[in-house]
Length: 96
Image 1: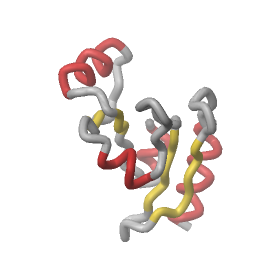
Image 2: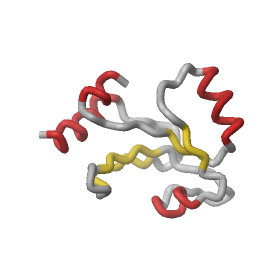
Image 3: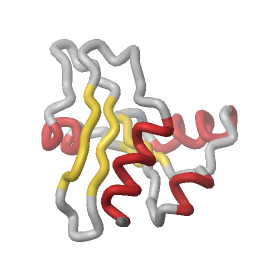
Image 4: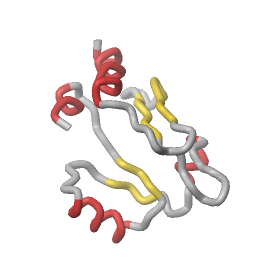
């Protein structure tokens, strides 16, 4: 989180679980960023990350200050996640 914060990034997690589920998850894993509830799957549909049967592709999106999508990492099955270095490289490119 320090790396992201030092680049001026705001981090949010979004999933279809409800707020009560998020609160327990955040406490369990000591998360320092907010988790947003996409219970109606509106964000899932807008970003095209839904899977048949209600699953999601694990994804990272870097959105510039003007609200434009600048970079994304969307996995096919949701098992891989980009390393922090890959994300901070993209953030640094926006800042520089």
